[in-house]
Image (cartoon, rainbow, N blue to C red; front, top):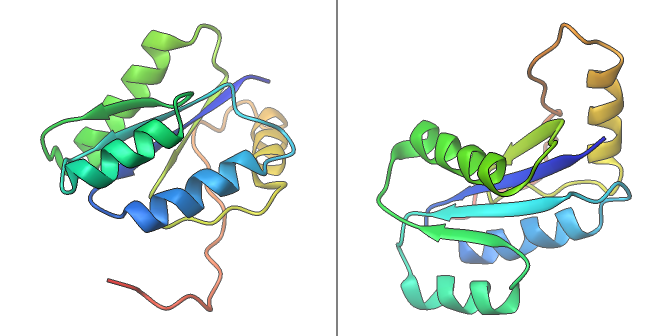
Length: 128
């Protein structure tokens, strides 16, 4: 199965780095990753972009979460053919190494299911 990840970022650059590290640890690697950023910290965003040249990046207006999520999904669909799944994430998500594989297997075993998510675990303090 081919899957891609899209991240909607609004100034959470430290969180974004951890999220990207979690995606890199996936046992079932993504075909592509795209980040849509609302431009809160252009210097930090440029640093992230240079550190991750393989990532499709776009900086644009704040479209709120849904509009930004739609933009990141459109970007992936335009750039990559044959995507089976798109995982849309907030930058503060930290994924376990088998997250993508488990979620994809569950969805593949249930063809009528069109959307899924993992559980949120307690223990992380809100850091803003």
